[in-house]
Image 1: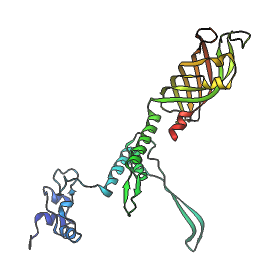
Image 2 (image 1 turned 180 degrees about the horizontal axis):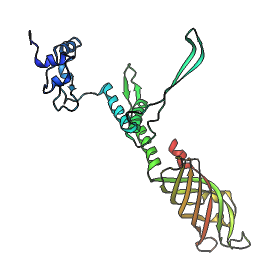
Image 3 (image 1 turned 120 degrees about the horizontal axis):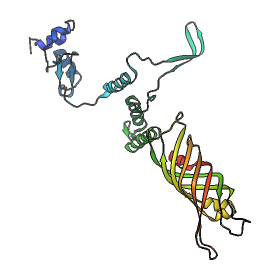
Image 4 (image 1 turned 60 degrees about the horizontal axis):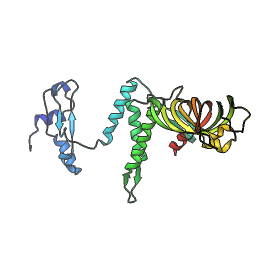
Length: 308
């Protein structure tokens, strides 16, 4: 190329020439000035990928290594920009608030300048921008120093964080299975057997302090993501036996079906409409079964265990 400039080089270097004059020119050769800059920086041309193309024109203006795979580096911002444009639209504006602490003296702030960014990328939790943000956050939280001035990514921590995001998403948007483990108080209505501890075995209501162990299905959260409806099956009675002394405390309680309303993973209001009261054999008496009904308030221990 000594002493000459190719038509490709002239087209790229002549920046003042309208784009319409470049139509039909496809260049695989880098402009001389760019090649010289790369050589001075010690960057081989084989480590560079460039694609310059006018919108609506199928012929690229410059194409060099455009099909090679590279680390996207700062170009990755195009992904988040595309997600923002798709979700919010080009006219959307985030609000950025600026606050001051202190007084202005001769145009100089004697204090703190506080900048508060606005916008919630997870306003729509299932959107691309929300999951892109969560992916970036999970990656940031997984970066550790390797002790020699470099950094490394803890793959286990990264996978665990992503799994937690997935669990949160399912909790908000999908029916899911869950382990039912609660401790609560309430009332039990049943017809106990005659054990000599009561004057009658007619149906009655007694206090109930009991655990529930089982499994079930939980709905997506609703009412501002505060409530979850649950349905399942389980058993209880060990705590009841230890805490209370009545004819009913001799029974093991089986819940073929129960319903619960979980409030912010803090407390549940439950009802078990068709309990089976299993009285084990005792003093020559065979195993007996009675029907029961219970309702009350319980603490969802399984939700607390998930947070540990």
